Image 1 (cartoon, rainbow, N blue to C red):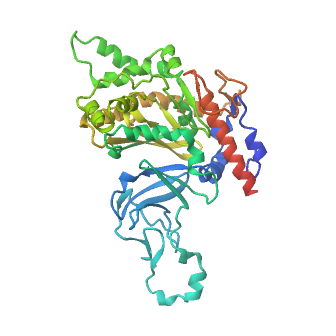
Image 2: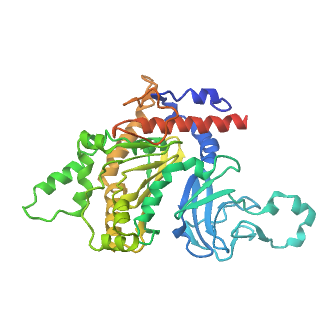
Image 3: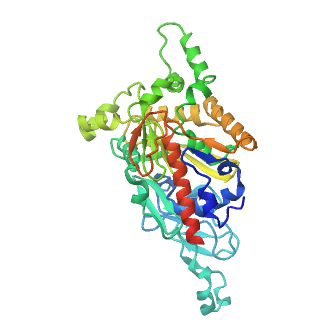
Length: 440
């Protein structure tokens, strides 16, 4: 099927309760996603604490576009396309560092201010001023036109025109607010580094999985289930390890996940854990509630910490766990390859034991050495291979389907509903085809 310049064919890939296998295996569709979906939605770049000082930078990608997030001389956070205006060389190669007041291209030493403006050219007398002014190169490193910082989290939209940040995210920003409010000072800092590994699957499989509550007790029985069985054999009176607290909820029964609830927001955003979650029964950290009460008052502190959302999916490609302060980015590399980054955050002003718990969770669940993470990876890889089978063409997302779902927002539904998955795929079709129609 030829999908380029064919929005009708793309729209037909998403039905009310099914999505076509080509969403996961077709490389042409993947390239169209980079061109349309990732350019027209608000995509996560990083956290401002990664660039605390003027000149600090962090390099990453938005879709397939290399960008650099930098603290400008006016202390604002800017996002630039990581490309020299001269010969197209990537100006910044390291993942992070400090560039001072300007960037210097390693090829011909053209320099650019941290807002992208051209600063200097060696042997500039060799260029006719009027000719140079008419060249695109005189405009410097291209700045991403739309950048928004919310509670320290930096997002951008690559294309000039499109939906506003507020309209795109709407009420879903409450998850980021709650995550930051868990700090007695209302601030987060990226801490503990990042865990990265490549999954042999399409990026949408990982996004889909974040609100799939019918798989944990099945896929993770061999890993989390084994950890719990070993713990149950420990001598009576043995203190329960933090690791067991984090492993055990993964094998909760269907009834537990049904009762958790799922909230479905607009534009593909949503979260599990409305009424309960796998993070709700962790042991209290000495001194934490006291610090929160001193900062917010007892009633507000209880309200903040009583919000135990499980996985919040921000369409298109991140997942946030507010109660455990982690964020995962699903970076598309190809139709069948995805780089996963798992970040952890410190609650500024909170006891260090909270960061210890966050780091342990990330290692146990999200690391390349994680037994839980590899349960999922195994299933993703099998799916990626299985979808090439010509025996069936459609993927089913019909669980607890309601015919009048379209247009309803901020709904709370059964915790094993696949409505949030349908919400994501409907958003995928909408943003893909709207942009394709405009391009045509």
